[in-house]
Image (cartoon, rainbow, N blue to C red; front, side, top):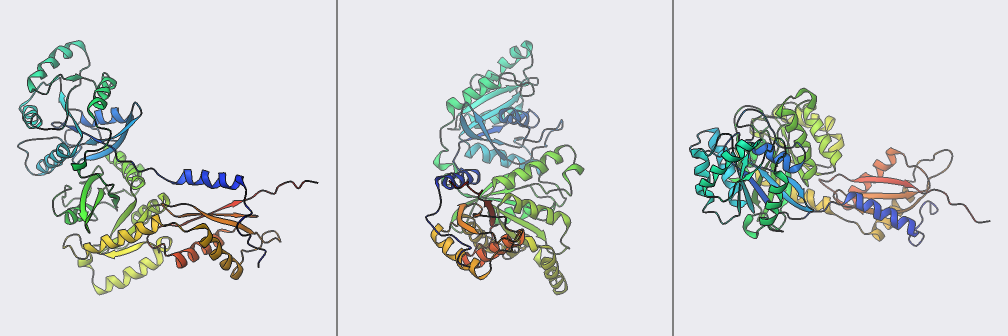
Length: 470
């Protein structure tokens, strides 16, 4: 079948433009950004202010205090500059129990941020908690801006002047709910926010970003706590403790990893209400923002529709994937045999994923997650040279040509790897290639070039016939 494949040297500037366009669609830009932390006592409007800064509803907002329990980072843009906004749970100096865990997240944000907004409710005035926060922040070398929130009228402007007593300088008067004063506030933020993160923030050097995903109560927060060796995420023995994605910087295998512990995805987003609905949407965003997803499945129970839906979401977004079968300490011999049958039957679409059997509770085999993630990311970043790809493809097509369509045999003229993350290949052809044949090419690519742990995409672009000059 030597006439099925045309080699190098036949392509035109038009094809170069097509390839460049495809690369532009696929490649993502990763740039280190400075962090702005939003801190303050509970229910002063921090999450509302975060949403106002972002210009979209991301942070969970409800009329009850304590909805935000962990520190969460979002990307924001103002006057052409990009930066991260870190929302935190309410800071209580004498907090106990769950609130103590929340307070710890806020303190970490204060230590690692490049600038801090401390938010006070102007309708209430400075409380003892506000004064305790101010006392800590006055010793901080990080730039601090005092924000008097809920200033909706001139009377409250006069009352807000009393916040000078906190010793944090002039209070910026805003109404996060209505947008009043937030533009001027952001101008002040850019004036003190550095162009790049400080080197000692722990984020310098670009750690790989990992999303922990799975249905509620599968052990995501327990795993991040086990990996970090401390209580980074709030863990309770009820489903749904984690509402927002939580950024945790963890050193594993001698290098930093940024983990995002996400809220468990419900069976259907439409069945969730209130803050659960928005938490589900942001979990999807967390997957899209990650490089590799670690999917936790409860190995002691049958694989569910929820598990498969999350796996499909990860695969569709093109992220590297590690499937961690958690609670392995609860799995007996009979369950293992049943699980293997379930995997063979249900996991056909992600047979390429890395697999690790772990117990987040006991720590069993959690150290195996690092080589699994590294293998998946290496595959995700892998690029095959054009010459090597076309020489290999020529042999594959010669051995197994594509099926006939309409009495004609489609010719593959040229192939290129248009992008990485995930590896995406484009076959330029004279006719349509059946989906089954594209899957065949994908399988052969995996066998030859070892793309374990990463999705591989094979796209076809049919070259239109050109008018011959008479």
